[in-house]
Image 1 (cartoon, rainbow, N blue to C red):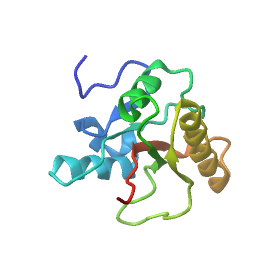
Image 2: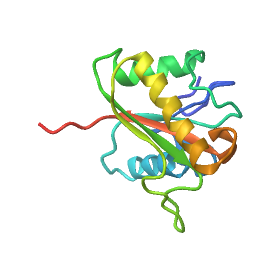
Image 3: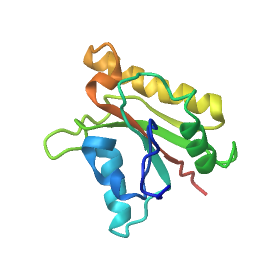
Image 4: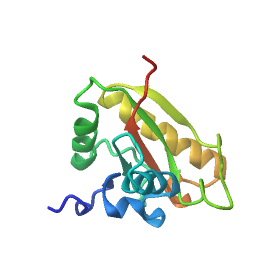
Amino acid sequence: MRADAVEPASRVVPLHTERARDPSLTGAKAANLARAAAAGLPVLPGFALVPNGRADNGADDPAVRRAWRELAGGVEKPLAVRSSSRHEDTATSSMAGRFRTVLDVRGWEAFTDAVQAVLDSAAVDTGMDTAMDTGTGVAATESVHPV
C-alpha cells in the first residue's frame, strides 16, 4: 500500500501524506498541520482520524490501533488528542476552545477514551446526535513536554 493511501474502510490518514492536506477529508486543524509539514516547518508526527459516519473511537479498527502503536511506540510517548473539524481553524472561524483537547495520553485505553471524549465534546457543543455528523474528526500527535 502507498504511504499516502488511506486503507480501505480505515479512518487513519498520516499527517505527512498529501491526502492529509485536504480539510474536507481530515478537518482544518489536521490539514493545516499537514500543510505546515509539507512546507518544511517543524510539525510533530501524527495522524488524523477522519469522520466515517460512526461516532465510535476506533477501538475495533486495526488500522487505528496500528497508527497509535507506531506513533506512541506502545505506551512510551505521550500523545495529544484534539478535534479537527472542517469548520474550525478556517479563514472565517477558529472555534478555539470549543472542543475538548486531551493531553499526556498514554496507552491504548487512554487513547481510545481521549478520542471518544473529543468526539463527545463536538456532539454536545453542536447539539448533533454524533460528532461525526458535524464533520469532526480527530488529530493525534506526539505531545511536547518542557525539558
